[in-house]
Length: 128
Image 1 (tube, rainbow, N blue to C red):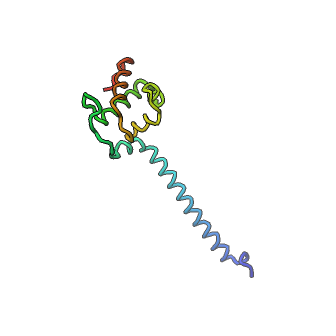
Image 2: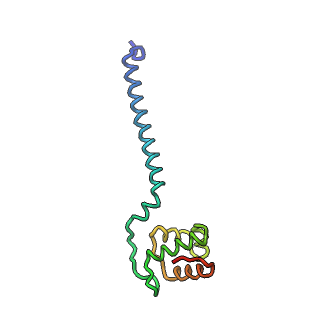
Image 3: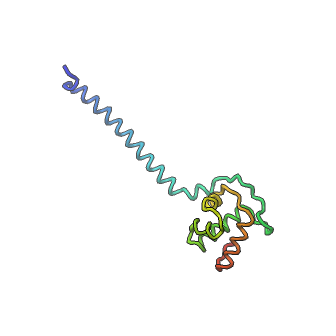
């Protein structure tokens, strides 16, 4: 007798395929939910991560890395329509460097803070 003719064999095969389908579907749904959750909480999660950069003063006013980052973000948001590319062009720096400053991955130097303050003053934008 052939396995295809045996109803128990067919039921066993389809039961295994159903279980496999449920597992694969569950994994796919879990992956989608994880992706959506990471996108929804992406900005909040980055701010809560500890930074390994030193918070020593950047300029003679005693501006630290956190304050310098806030100045750059305010300038970007208020004067350059929240565009890293436009801010990078105005500062004369590569876009990747501006993105790294915003992510807290690179140290912001005094030249950038002075340029940001000058640009804000010329454009009449309050950044501090």
